[in-house]
Length: 233
Image (tube, rainbow, N blue to C red):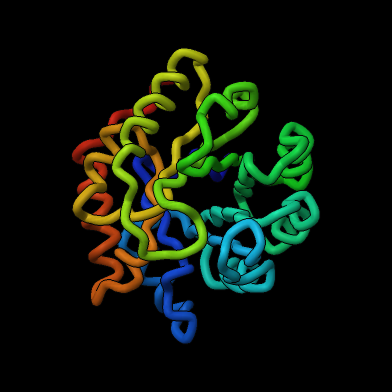
């Protein structure tokens, strides 16, 4: 489980939702060669979000393709039913949405029992205060910076304010969770996102729609590093 802390911050985590599945192995290889230590897997069920992506079988395939850290984001209803499947498929970290969990402590415990790091995600319209009681029990908080369900959306500008607020809460509570941002990340805002408090930047379309996947990952990381504030822990 200590794989979480092996990668220097900030981290670029390319989302394979935007990859070319005909050339998935090649796309992932190029992203990793460009300096991406994490691969982000967006799981959508067509119920919690208005789209369907893929399931444990694809995560298992990705696990055979790369040794990169697998960051699995469950945008699904009733995530407890599928935690074991994604853990078995090779997830290193499983993130669930606070909006989908009636018993979030139990869900986080289940993730840990299956040998994975714990993450909790929050949608743009959900208050950060809903997370406060569990911040000392998670390895990562994922701030959605678009409304979940589709790739290629524009970054929601007030997310900077939410990032800064979460960073200050982390400092106040003396927690050591990572802050991840997912949605609308690109060359035009990576520096500002890292400066506001993000440790992990998920990038989908900006990476995999590029003609130079490795070069785009490297450029994003350089941009993020130039503005990065180290964790307040």
